[in-house]
Length: 94
Image (cartoon, rainbow, N blue to C red; front, side, top):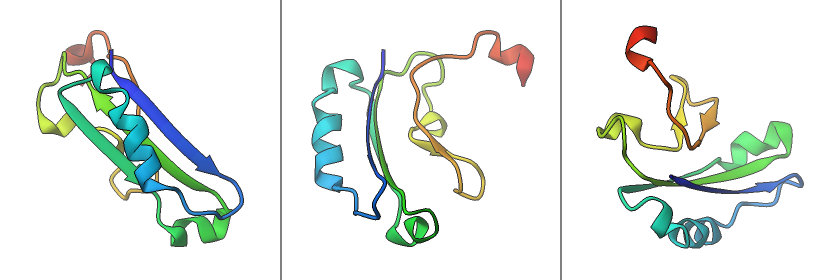
């Protein structure tokens, strides 16, 4: 089972990247295969006032490639997600 963590600031305060990194490393036992961190830029928060940091410790089970690294985004990097789970019958969906 993967490990996920995050930090949200609703008052334009910057995310502490070192803190998100420490939270992620504390979940080492949950996912020893990979680690990823996403911190939105302060310019992204200017319009919404919200800053977000996401962390992910990966336990590779289905997709062992780097294409499944997390956190992951859509094509234009406007949406980000980190999650723990798998999609059943993926080969029939795609």
